Image (cartoon, rainbow, N blue to C red):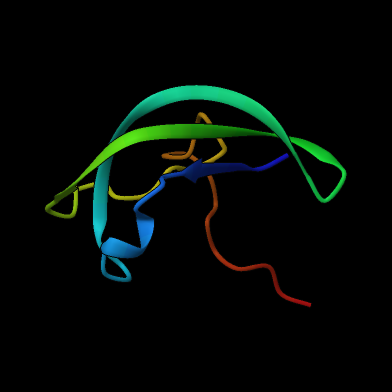
Length: 70
């Protein structure tokens, strides 16, 4: 399951910019799967946060984030 953001004027933001959005959470189909999307109504460019990434593991501080070896 993934998560996305739908923002009508997304093309106005430069690649790799950090954008704070306001909107509602909804469910929609993508490639035959239900996904959660934020249907954004507005977006504002912000400075990169000091901790910019979201990790799917709630205990990410204790997780081994090293790449897996084949």
